[in-house]
Image (cartoon, rainbow, N blue to C red; front, side):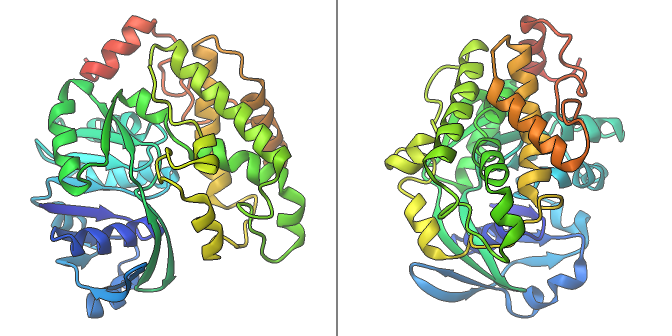
Length: 358
């Protein structure tokens, strides 16, 4: 299958290498075209439990039109903060039948569709999003990526849901046996693990993050008090899903720490043992704040409010993050208010998610 991978981060390089090795025709695009030179010259060095090897791509280019041309699947494992710009860049090139997959999405399926349509492209493009990246991965150089673990469950919601069969069939070609239908895009967005894991970790580890040069929030930073807050926040997420009519499985985050039933299976120890997550985290610039808190947590809090679910932990963490950043995060760009959806009845929202905009 022809797959376009858009972005230059850890997940993007993992996607390009892993899917190329699986036999797909993968084309990689990033805005910083000059940074692709090492990939163009020698491919990507992929490291995992099998050892290191070099993987060639079909194309690595800064020409987005060339990368998207003929692609059945457009994979965007980039942070949600980049989605609006990527949508504007994609708008002139997307065509009927293409599937855009956001792992994870932060409700980007709806916002990207809106941007593409506003740019004048009415092509029948289907969007989908899931709860996490398909890989726990870190780049080790300009053309080198290490994959610690691959996801074994990717609960995926589709927008518009009426085209789910087509979208899930296409995505499953890239991730066989892993994609699980969880309904519409809102259900998919409420599977996003980042806004549950990362805001408590960075906010409750704010002092060591600002004191030490490097600090592993997933190892030393994950202590019983942090786990208690994370579990309470996740309970609010699951209560919100239930209130909106989304049934189990909800993929409770406790499974990530306690057993092998979560999206990555039994992954937490492998993550901490790898050492790749002992890093420098700037609370004003890191994606855990800008993506998972400013966008993702604010989105969750707004959906809980819409569903009349009491969510004191979500709102409290959002207030703390706002105090650090010096601004009110309750009116962020991914809230249902900002997206113009909070005034819809449940039936109207369900209809929009099923069929797309009128």
